[in-house]
Structure formats: structure tokens, C-alpha cells
Length: 118
Image (tube, rainbow, N blue to C red; front, side, top):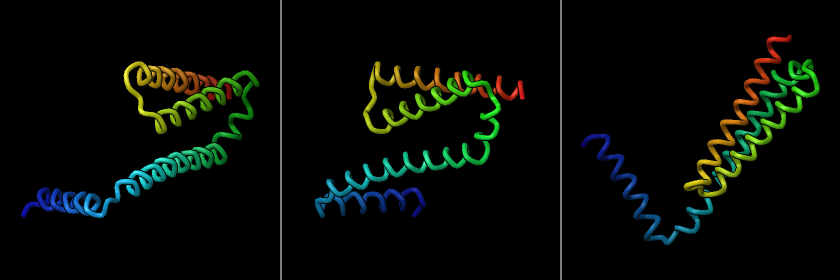
């Protein structure tokens, strides 16, 4: 038996077990908890990166550049939380990508300008 077929049979057995045990609610709850845990893990990694690397360098920038950089990061984080908690379709998805692109552009542009001056 090929590994692909074996893995499909394993997935089918797990799906059948969920249906037989009527565990759809528990599975949805576990999925929601994992989604929030993923958001928290991303936030912790970003905080550690900022604390170890970025904070000392960002403190040397002018106040306006610091404000632009931190506001762009905050907007991107709010946009990601919206993406992970809501189901985005149509214009909502377009708005997500536009806001993410603008905030990433502002943060990267400010970061590169700050690195050039230091």
C-alpha cells in the first residue's frame, strides 16, 4: 500500500471516529483554541524579537519615525487578528490585503530609513 493511500485511510478513520462519537462541537472548540494559541505564539515571538533586537535600534530614531513604525505594526497586528477571527470574503478580503500591504510598506520603509540614518 502506498503511503498516500495509507494516510488517506488514516484521515478517513479519524473523520469517521469524530462523526460516530458526535464530537463535532469538541473539534470546533479545539480548532478555535488552536487558532487563538497560534495568534498568541506569533505575538510572543514578535515581542521577543522586538525586545532582543529592535528596541535598542528603534530608540535611536526620531520620535515621528518611531510613531509611524509602531502604528504600522499595531495596524498590521489588528489586521491579522481580524483575519484569524473573521471569515473574510469579497471586499473584506480585499480590505485585509490592502491594509496589510500598506502597513507592511510603512513599517519596512520606516525601518530602512532608520537604518540608513544610524
